[in-house]
Length: 164
Image (cartoon, rainbow, N blue to C red; front, side):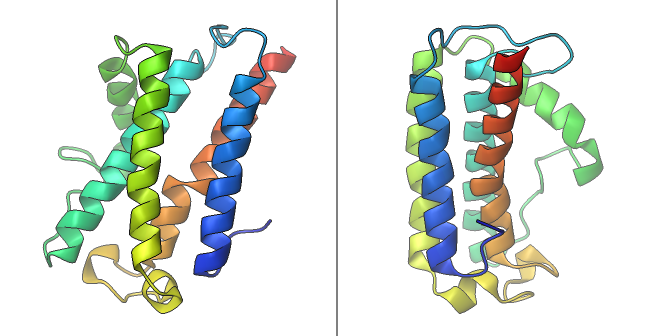
């Protein structure tokens, strides 16, 4: 499916890609494999923790933005140009989390993001400039990035690592 353009597609692709990600992981002979050098996220735990944290940031942006305030995006002390440094900080922050904990955290934050999607109409999700805090884009674009696109990224990294 191409990039979602309405609520139904967003829910479907988000759910489908999330389920594909967990199906892939659950069908692996060894979930604790180490990925080849050259990527920051070195294992399944790293990838799940990364997505979980981006879910948390999305929920925070939403909560702050919907109060009429300006969220610090992507995170306090970081600009969008600093995303690689932010991702490294996220990676460092989750190094003591187990794979089991990462799965639990991701499942919980997934539900939180899905609840945001469910609250809104197509117009509220996909009308550009509807909310001051989303700037020139739509709430849906942020949610696509935090959900289906991120899950697709994770699936590709895991599959690529399994081939090597």
